[in-house]
Length: 104
Image 1 (cartoon, rainbow, N blue to C red):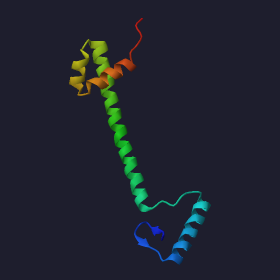
Image 2 (image 1 turned 90 degrees about the horizontal axis):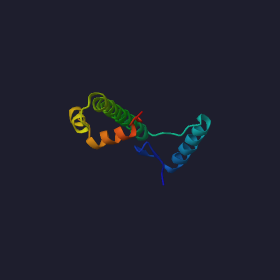
Image 3 (image 1 turned 30 degrees about the vertical axis):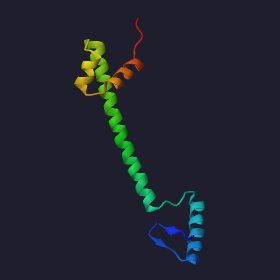
Image 4 (image 1 turned 60 degrees about the horizontal axis):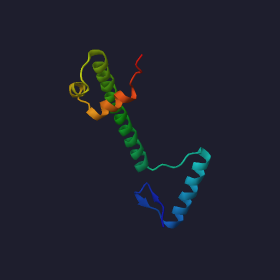
């Protein structure tokens, strides 16, 4: 089976072996694995996806905190707070249970 260089070309068998040896040497010397361009793009997409997911989670967390304040400090119902801030009611209920302050 021929090693495919970046999935773009197939090397002749003798160059395939030579290329594999060189890549192994570089990986060993640099203490890092060879990453194809397709793998680099996938990793970049994964990082971007992670950043977006983190931003969305942060935004939801902020809304849940605001809803908690509305319920706790202003006496607004849980359902109304969820509706006004456009957060899923189940998420708000779970958040309030997790962040419930003990009564004194």
